[in-house]
Image 1 (cartoon, rainbow, N blue to C red):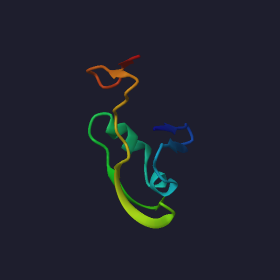
Image 2: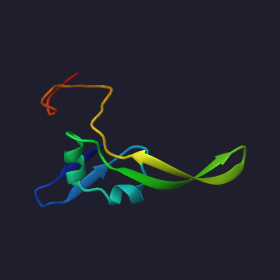
Image 3: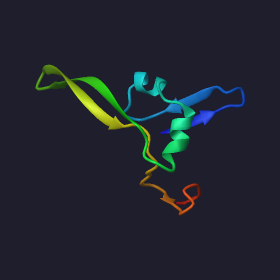
Image 4: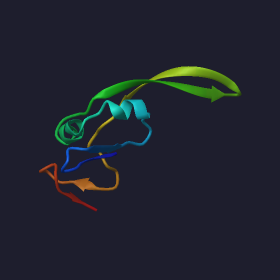
Length: 82
């Protein structure tokens, strides 16, 4: 997940496993705040299929968090090591 804010205040948000409707509700400030404190949760309704039977599931997901399994975050919460 990442967010980019351009000079003209245009924002680009990307997130894996989160619907587009949920990403539209996020602001760049949510990503910045998630570095130092837990991010917000969002409730999504998803259509799933199991054994050729369709059903809907309500999923509660944490949409922004500072955890990365590929990098080690240092104590200042900004710099990281590979």
